[in-house]
Image (cartoon, rainbow, N blue to C red; front, side, top):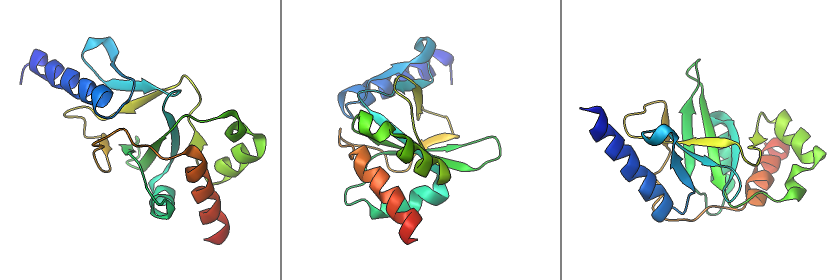
Amino acid sequence: MSAPRFADRAADRCRHYRHVCGLDAFLLEGTGPIYLRAGNTGAIRMPAKLGEPVRARLAHPGPVIVELDDTSEAWWTMLTTPVHHHLRDYAIFAMLSAATAQIVPYGHEVRLPTPRDRSCRWLATPTDSYRPSPDDVVTAIRAYRYEG
């Protein structure tokens, strides 16, 4: 497969993310990978072993990006509506840190799945612009940590 065709597929995927999923996606260097900046879309990152029970606690779970790190450990990034300042409180930061989770800081880039990238994929491909509230995700993390 030629590079231009792959670039077209990445551009098509990026357009899908923008128009169908409502994500402020952009192609890095014009051909991929695809990213979004945290801001209009929030993101909470956690290990998959935490993400599974947290997602199960959400009444309406939203899009989840699954990434494999260098040690092949799976990390989940749950996309949310914008993260408001009250969630950047020290007590919430400490609770999330103890759970090995973090709110992706405003302005930081979040990698989105790209064609042929096996280390970054959707748990379930989003088909619309729905994303849960970050408050709901943080509440689910807190409930899992304290209720088991």
